[in-house]
Image (tube, rainbow, N blue to C red; front, side):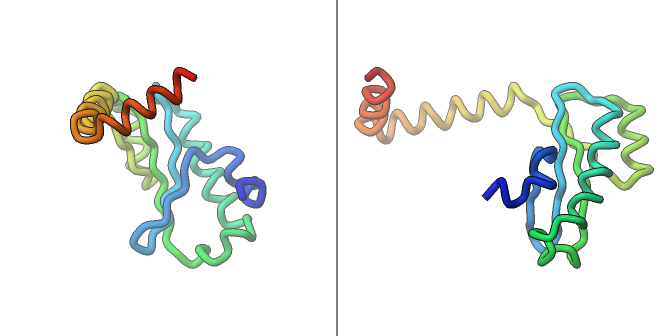
Length: 120
């Protein structure tokens, strides 16, 4: 299926359709001005990709996802109408560790089977 959407998916990190809105997302560990140009190009490509034609009438939002603030980029994104979202990687890792611990405690047999598969 990815081949079908290669015009856009070749570059975009994520495209999400939710509540009638198409979100085009670019993620960078370190904020970079080049990501803003990439997002603008992805939006243009989105409207030129025939496989997405059923979504062309939907509003689009551009989202720049990163791990830290760059206040000049925050301001620039604001002027361009691009959402600047900062994620806390350490928090995500801790949440995933917690989920894994909960899984181990509730489904230890399945977890052991999973580990056996990895070992083989």
